[in-house]
Image 1 (tube, rainbow, N blue to C red):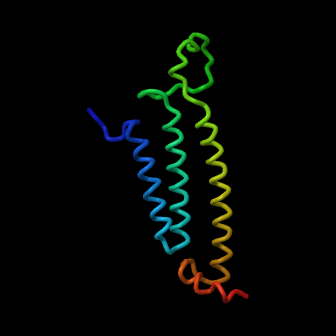
Image 2 (cartoon, rainbow, N blue to C red):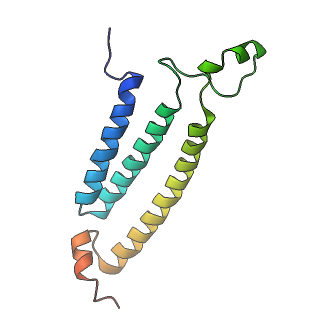
Length: 127
Protein backbone atom coordinates (compact mmCIF):
# COMPACT_ATOMS: atom_id res chain seq x y z
CA UNK A 1 0.00 0.00 0.00
CA UNK A 2 1.50 3.29 -1.09
CA UNK A 3 1.35 6.25 1.24
CA UNK A 4 1.71 9.90 0.38
CA UNK A 5 4.47 10.72 2.84
CA UNK A 6 7.47 8.79 1.58
CA UNK A 7 10.90 10.19 2.17
CA UNK A 8 11.12 11.37 -1.44
CA UNK A 9 7.99 13.43 -0.91
CA UNK A 10 9.18 14.89 2.39
CA UNK A 11 11.77 17.06 0.64
CA UNK A 12 9.08 18.39 -1.68
CA UNK A 13 6.76 18.88 1.30
CA UNK A 14 9.47 20.81 3.18
CA UNK A 15 10.09 23.07 0.17
CA UNK A 16 6.35 23.66 -0.31
CA UNK A 17 5.95 24.43 3.38
CA UNK A 18 8.87 26.88 3.16
CA UNK A 19 7.36 28.82 0.25
CA UNK A 20 3.84 28.80 1.72
CA UNK A 21 5.11 30.15 5.05
CA UNK A 22 7.30 32.71 3.26
CA UNK A 23 4.27 33.93 1.30
CA UNK A 24 2.24 34.05 4.52
CA UNK A 25 5.01 36.00 6.23
CA UNK A 26 5.06 38.58 3.45
CA UNK A 27 1.28 39.01 3.28
CA UNK A 28 0.34 38.85 6.98
CA UNK A 29 -0.63 42.07 8.71
CA UNK A 30 -0.70 40.77 12.26
CA UNK A 31 2.50 40.34 14.30
CA UNK A 32 1.32 37.12 15.92
CA UNK A 33 0.65 35.55 12.52
CA UNK A 34 4.08 36.71 11.38
CA UNK A 35 5.69 34.97 14.34
CA UNK A 36 3.81 31.75 13.56
CA UNK A 37 4.90 31.92 9.92
CA UNK A 38 8.53 32.45 11.00
CA UNK A 39 8.29 29.37 13.22
CA UNK A 40 6.85 27.29 10.37
CA UNK A 41 9.57 28.63 8.06
CA UNK A 42 12.27 27.52 10.50
CA UNK A 43 10.63 24.11 10.90
CA UNK A 44 10.55 23.59 7.15
CA UNK A 45 14.26 24.41 6.87
CA UNK A 46 15.06 21.93 9.65
CA UNK A 47 12.93 19.27 7.97
CA UNK A 48 14.67 19.85 4.64
CA UNK A 49 18.14 19.57 6.23
CA UNK A 50 17.19 16.33 7.94
CA UNK A 51 15.90 14.90 4.68
CA UNK A 52 19.17 15.86 2.95
CA UNK A 53 21.09 13.93 5.60
CA UNK A 54 19.45 10.61 4.87
CA UNK A 55 21.05 8.00 2.65
CA UNK A 56 18.94 5.81 0.39
CA UNK A 57 15.27 5.09 0.82
CA UNK A 58 15.39 3.61 4.31
CA UNK A 59 15.85 5.33 7.62
CA UNK A 60 19.54 6.13 8.03
CA UNK A 61 21.52 4.76 10.90
CA UNK A 62 22.90 7.26 13.40
CA UNK A 63 26.47 8.42 12.74
CA UNK A 64 27.63 6.99 16.08
CA UNK A 65 28.21 3.25 15.76
CA UNK A 66 28.80 0.93 18.68
CA UNK A 67 29.01 -2.32 16.73
CA UNK A 68 32.36 -2.76 14.92
CA UNK A 69 30.74 -5.09 12.36
CA UNK A 70 28.56 -2.23 11.12
CA UNK A 71 31.58 -0.11 10.19
CA UNK A 72 31.81 -2.03 6.91
CA UNK A 73 28.45 -0.63 5.79
CA UNK A 74 29.44 3.05 5.61
CA UNK A 75 26.85 3.81 2.92
CA UNK A 76 24.00 3.27 5.40
CA UNK A 77 25.33 5.78 7.94
CA UNK A 78 23.69 9.19 8.04
CA UNK A 79 25.72 12.30 7.33
CA UNK A 80 26.34 14.09 10.67
CA UNK A 81 26.74 17.57 9.14
CA UNK A 82 23.01 18.18 8.47
CA UNK A 83 22.28 16.92 11.98
CA UNK A 84 24.72 19.42 13.48
CA UNK A 85 23.30 22.22 11.33
CA UNK A 86 19.80 21.22 12.37
CA UNK A 87 20.65 21.35 16.07
CA UNK A 88 22.25 24.75 15.60
CA UNK A 89 19.24 26.02 13.62
CA UNK A 90 16.83 24.87 16.33
CA UNK A 91 18.77 26.67 19.06
CA UNK A 92 19.12 29.86 17.01
CA UNK A 93 15.44 29.63 16.08
CA UNK A 94 14.38 29.56 19.73
CA UNK A 95 16.54 32.59 20.47
CA UNK A 96 15.17 34.52 17.48
CA UNK A 97 11.56 33.72 18.40
CA UNK A 98 12.18 34.79 22.01
CA UNK A 99 13.60 38.13 20.87
CA UNK A 100 10.74 38.66 18.39
CA UNK A 101 8.11 37.91 21.03
CA UNK A 102 9.80 40.33 23.44
CA UNK A 103 9.88 43.07 20.81
CA UNK A 104 6.23 42.40 19.89
CA UNK A 105 5.27 42.62 23.56
CA UNK A 106 6.98 46.01 23.92
CA UNK A 107 5.41 47.39 20.72
CA UNK A 108 1.94 46.12 21.62
CA UNK A 109 2.08 47.60 25.11
CA UNK A 110 3.42 50.92 23.86
CA UNK A 111 1.09 51.43 20.89
CA UNK A 112 -1.85 49.17 21.76
CA UNK A 113 -1.93 47.28 18.44
CA UNK A 114 -0.36 44.23 16.82
CA UNK A 115 -1.20 45.33 13.28
CA UNK A 116 1.78 46.13 11.04
CA UNK A 117 -0.17 48.71 8.98
CA UNK A 118 -1.18 50.70 12.07
CA UNK A 119 2.37 50.61 13.40
CA UNK A 120 3.71 51.93 10.08
CA UNK A 121 1.40 54.95 10.34
CA UNK A 122 2.89 55.69 13.78
CA UNK A 123 6.42 55.58 12.39
CA UNK A 124 7.08 59.31 12.56
CA UNK A 125 5.03 59.88 15.73
CA UNK A 126 7.10 57.99 18.27
CA UNK A 127 7.67 59.67 21.63
